[in-house]
Image: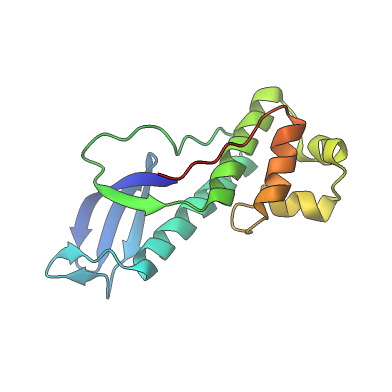
Length: 147
């Protein structure tokens, strides 16, 4: 899954990026070439980790995560989100809408506290099958496509 970001400002060795309505400042030593951001993997990895940390903060604060809103054309950077992270966002938002806890969901799918805490953590690479099991328990189906 791709989400888009835009560069708000570049100053010295710092860059400010907006992604999913979240502003983040990064140290870009080694990521700039002639004033242009290099679209290399270390930079995108740092950006993804920052986004996943923010998702965890939203979860702790019991807020919906809206990272999949359609971005305007000024958001010209693209960041690939791992499938399991995208599914976790959808699962979290559904739990909030239903006013359910991770513990209640764990009982529904017969998963222990450790397994559920891993599913709840956006930085942990849970198996897609485990997240799908949780979504299915909420009568939600996962449909995959390649394109």
